Length: 291
Image (tube, rainbow, N blue to C red; front, side, top):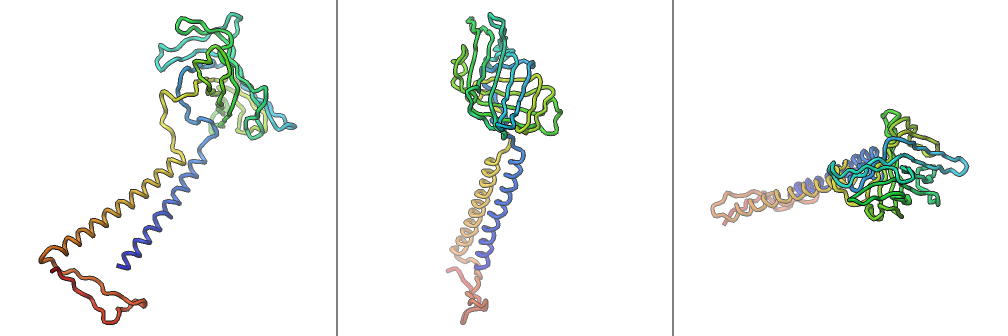
């Protein structure tokens, strides 16, 4: 009985140690592959305004202030109001011929957003939705968060992705987007971004997507995260322990059932032992017989 207890204790100690090491390993692997984007897996929500692949993305770093100005300019192309192709509407120049999407914000040398009055987003154009024409300043906002990820082992023309959260502050489509929006930028050519915000970089033909920052209508399957690994390992430990407990209870119930039946075969048990390991005085292997 003592040997069985010792085996059980050793198994209980061994399971957390092995599981803990596995969790640390998996968390480390997950952390090494995770990027710094606000939404690394993206999402779909509507309205969604796609920017045409024209214009440029630039970042000018100032060594004296240890900050840089990040700018994006291109032209909005189409607005998608729902998941089907029939919900796509072209964005055209407004009455002044303006069709433009621009972003400016200040970052520190680590790529963190710096609160500056010049941080802003603006989108100009004209669009007809439901028989009503919206033109001029369609949407404006103020950046509240910024993320970026350098794409290693990729051609230089697509070596970086940027995203940010916007607080919607005005525009003809402000009500449709709600209080917050999400903006994603992917330069399609000649990108020089290597993940370093202490140096200037640029990219051409930025592909952009401006989406309402609300519950996604079509959610992608996320990649495994640290929390997912921890929860999975924890569930495995709990399940294994519960399974062992059920097996132990079944064995005890089977032994008890056998002892309670008339005519059951005798069951041998070990006599008590002293601390030295020798049989205790006047002890011997006993035989327990059913009544």
